[in-house]
Image 1 (cartoon, rainbow, N blue to C red):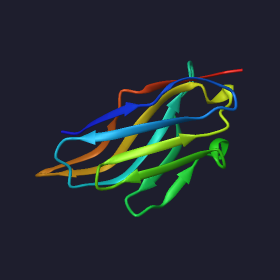
Image 2: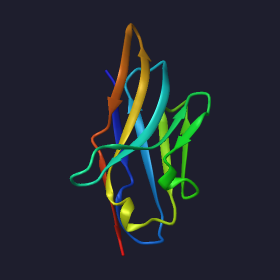
Image 3: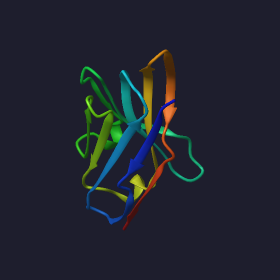
Image 4: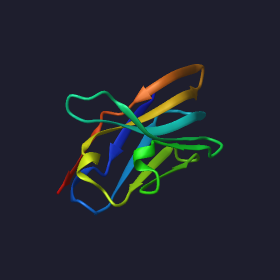
Length: 121
């Protein structure tokens, strides 16, 4: 079983920065892709950014040039540095892991519990 634990959310003024972290716990051999999604009130959960174990990165158009995703494969962690934040970035941010391999187990998809990011104008 894998657990994803997020940290780093909070309240920030527009134009400010926040750094989110997500650590995978459990006995893990590999994780194919890790990333971040977000969900605003009344909206669907949308992709923010993903990064594969090989370093291939994908960003939503709305965050390109402002957000930076990175990961440490040895620690099973993924980070999201968010700069030039806007009120529209306000949402619950969820950590995601795809293709998690452990001893005798394969987990197609896992989610963290979510962390609130609020950007005030």
